[in-house]
Amino acid sequence: MNLTTNDRYEFIRKLNVEIEKIANLANGHLNIYFKNKLITPLWNLNLDSVIETLQNYDLILNKFINIQLKYVDSNALSIVDHDAIVNHLADILIILSLIVEFYEQEDEGNIVIGKNKC
Image 1 (cartoon, rainbow, N blue to C red):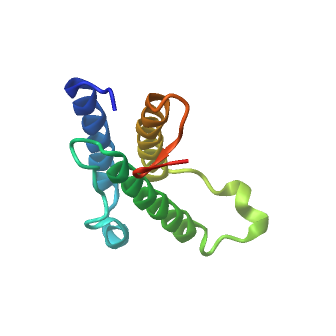
Image 2 (image 1 turned 90 degrees about the vertical axis):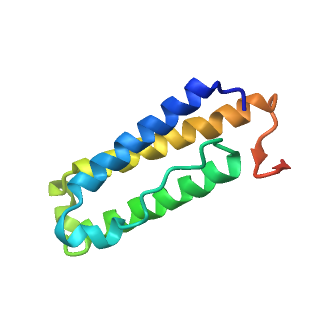
């Protein structure tokens, strides 16, 4: 991946800011869902690490949404509001997806999944 050290540092910094915000917001009963699960990909941002981290946050977001919707009647879904934690999780997914996009663009049109080209 053709990211400079400064680019990599900036991606990691942005991810850590979002993780810090989630950690500050996840109080009381939510801590069990986030404890030791808020991770950043390896510093070198290799594709396997980024994809693994992306999948981790996708699972966390889905679990968190399921928790929020557990006791909501399907007729009342319109009253469910997004909260800050969902927004920060979505921001992390966007950042990680951008990194994956850099890999895809670098491979001259071939999509790289792990170490295998498709």
